[in-house]
Length: 198
Image 1 (cartoon, rainbow, N blue to C red):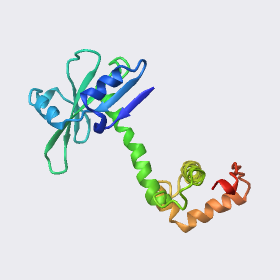
Image 2: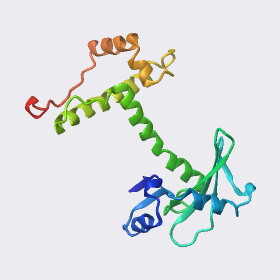
Image 3: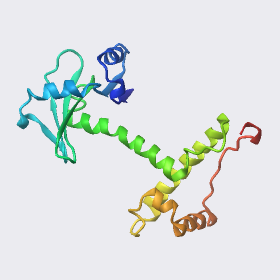
Image 4: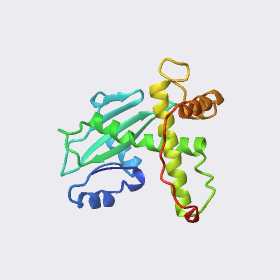
C-alpha cells in the first residue's frame, strides 16, 4: 500500500511512525515550509529539474531510509515558495520527478469532491441516516461514472466532448440524450435497500 498525505501529517514524528509500519510506502508533504526555504538557500538554481510550468524539484542526498525532495514553485505573483516531499519509495521505483507527479495526483480526488459538492449536491444531503447517505453517495458515484463513460464513448467528435461534467449536467440536451440512451435498451441494475433503513 502507498499512502499520499498532505502537510498536515508531515511532521517528523509522523514520518517516523509511518516508517515503523512494516511494508507501508508513503509520500508525504513536509509540515514546515520554513525548513524547505532554509534548505533551498544551499541548492544552486541549475540543480533543479523542471517538472511543470512554475515547478522544479531537487532531490537531497539520501540519509537513512527516507528520501527528501525539495520542490520549488513560482506563484502567480512571481515569488518562489518551497516545500519538501518525504518518501520511502526507492529511486529505482520512483524518480524525484515521478514522485512529484504522483504526490500531486492526490489533487484529483480533492478536485472530484469539490466538483461533486457543486455539481451533484453532496453538501446538501437530505438525510442523516447512514444507509440514506450511503445510497446517495453510491448513486452519485454511479451517475458520475456513467456521465464520464458516456462522454468518452458517445461524445467523441462532438462539441460536448471537451465539456466539464457540470456543464453536461446543466445541459438539457445532454440530459435528454442520456435519457434516450437508457430508453433504447441500456439496462442498469441497482441493489435496492429497504426504505425503512433510509
